[in-house]
Image (cartoon, rainbow, N blue to C red; front, side, top):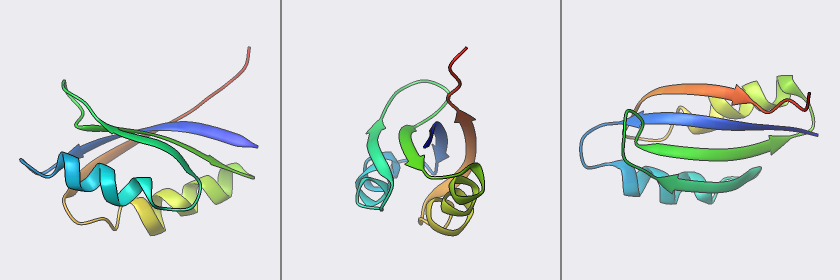
Length: 77
């Protein structure tokens, strides 16, 4: 199992809507709108890194109002 934080920048005024839409996608554990350089932070999980990448590109980045994403896989050192 692979988990990651996905940091999302949105168009002005779209953070809450983006978080609500993403929270309903399969594989999403949590989606919160936040303040700071990013507007939404998502915690996601998938079976493989490739599947995680497909989720980000095919599902998350297609949500209306998103301008940029940064995916940060969780590592256990």
